[in-house]
Amino acid sequence: MKTEIIKVDAGNPDIEVIRYAAEILNSGGLVAFPTETVYGLGADVFNETAVRKVFEVKNRPVDNPLIVHVSDYQQLADLSVNFPEVGKALTKEFWPGPLTLVIKCSQKIPKIVTGGLDTVAVRMPLNKVTLELIKCLRKPIVGPSANLSGRPSPTSAEHVFEDLSGKIELILDAGNTKIGLESTVIDITTQPPLVLRDGGLTREEIEMVIGDLTTTNSLEYKKRSPGTRYRHYAPKAKLIIIPRRDRSQFNIAFEQYKKENKKIGCITYSFDVEEEKSVIVRKTVNDLEVIGRELFRLLRELDWENVDIILVEAVQEVGLGKAIMDRLRKASNS
Ligand code: TXA
Ligand code: MG
Image (cartoon, rainbow, N blue to C red; front, side):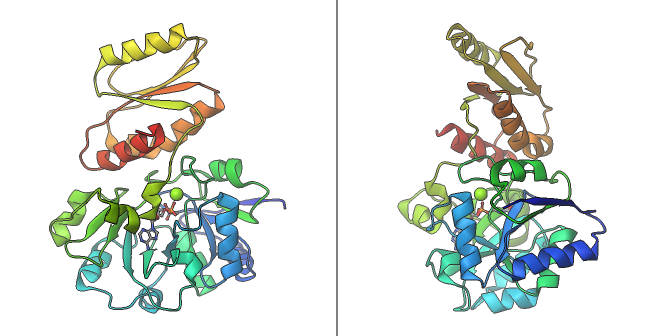
């Protein structure tokens, strides 16, 4: 299969392109779509064969359920049962946007979407191209990140092409994504709501609206958040986290890998590292939004340079820093 890439204007998408993409989805094909967080891999939520293909092309375990993307509240109502008050407050404040809600699901959703759970994860993405696409299809779409399972999520059409070319019909290219980290996932079937994945909307922002959230690392949590069981977001190189602003720790690791003749990639913001033949440097700035937006792209770029080791400077675990550190830990397998 040849994968087509079509550029779309994020602010003013061409309706002909949207119709074309909707037709592909309607006939059971797969279309990668832009969102404000990362690119997603879309299929018609009610087409089981198409949804099965999503798992196959991503090489994703079938017990790791998918997020359903909606463009209006009627679609949400059709997917849910007993939608709680807290959900209304959250959607009013944050949708469309980088917040995914896990809610009790209606019988209409095929089991393959939810991995057989009685809950479904839903979000309304903040991206005109994708909202128009769902509107035109008149059905919600499933949308896991459009990467191979275990790889960093794609923040550009080029990243999607790298992982899925030849396996899907179409990629809608609306440029780089704005947030660069996936949505925050919270389970609102319990009180207080449970954070299942930190992401592009900070806990602080959510707590301003609905009060305290909880997290737990218990087995129950792992059962409820199937995604947490698998290795994630990983570059091909081995990733090592260096404590923030700790130049001496950095030097120790750096010298050790140099002695072993490794090719080293560095992502830092508080200190400079000199580039050499076997040292590739990606200096960023001390700004969580910028680091969040660039992280997955930098990991892929360092893989393209064939580095053996990536040394990344940790960030402070507040605001978006929580999601960034979560991705780094998962990528480093620690
Ligand atoms: O920003 C995002 O959320 C992107 C864009 C494309 O929307 N999508 C995304 O999807 O990151 P994915 O499939 O890569 O991550 C979905 C996460 C997984 O960790 C999965 O386990 C969890 O949501 N999830 C899905 N359904 C769930 C459910 N019913 N209960 C608990 N966790 C669920
Ligand atoms: Mg993913």
